[in-house]
Image 1 (cartoon, rainbow, N blue to C red):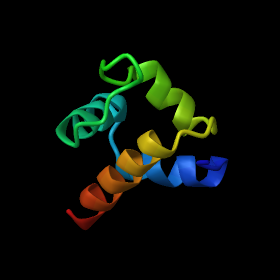
Image 2: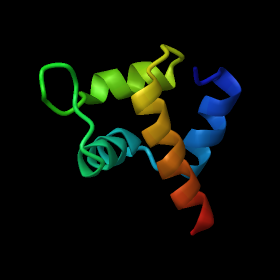
Image 3: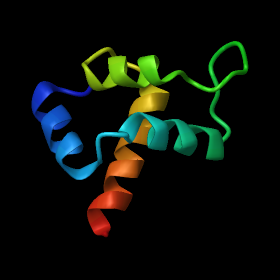
Length: 70
């Protein structure tokens, strides 16, 4: 679960369009929802707000690490 403090840290590194970037990352990795469709940007925002979702959280942290290195 992404905490409020982690949320602020992640948002400081990712731009305001982070949901689209996370969605692209999930598609690249072949990760889709139970219906076989891409995870929605609402699901990604909910995960950033503290609702646990391991697959989306992994993609967020991976994107965060990539952007932080730049």
